[in-house]
Structure formats: C-alpha cells, structure tokens
Length: 112
Image (cartoon, rainbow, N blue to C red; front, side, top):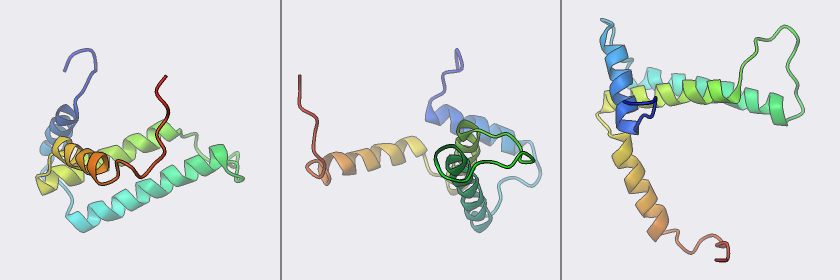
C-alpha cells in the first residue's frame, strides 16, 4: 500500500487486520446490518444538515459527510469480510449488470 493508495482488496485486508486483533472479532450479520443502518442514518442526518432544511444545533458535534461515508464504508467492509465476500468481485459483477442489462436505460451524453 504505497502513497495511501488502497485498492478495495487492500481496504478489506486492512480492516481484517484491525478486527483480527480483538478477541470478539466481527459482529454477527444482524448486528452489522443494524450498524450499517445506524451509520446510514448518520450520513442522512449530515446530508440533511448540509443540503436540507434542518441546520445543526449549536450543541451538536461537528461531523462531515466524508466522515460519515467512511464510517459506513468501514461497517460495509466488516460485513463483506465476515461473509467472505470480495467487494472487488461484487463491484465487477454489479458493473457488468449495469453495462449489459441497463445499457440503454439512461440517456447518454453525446460524444464531442
């Protein structure tokens, strides 16, 4: 992992090494799903503060969309690792699906 450039595989390995140092290991799937839901809620709240009509209270902690996306990504990687799923492979499969099944679904930009 050079210059802080991580592949998804590197990120999965990094998280696995971090979690591997604890006796508890990964949470069970339903617990991780609840954590993902919680983190998604926190991301939603942060987006609402930035783009919606509900500004933060003065007493609320400062947080960023980047930070909340990072939290969500961490839990997603934990879930994939616990399930033995390669997120790179999952990405390739979903992109193949979009490039084939949905190839004509959206209006493409004109080539210049």
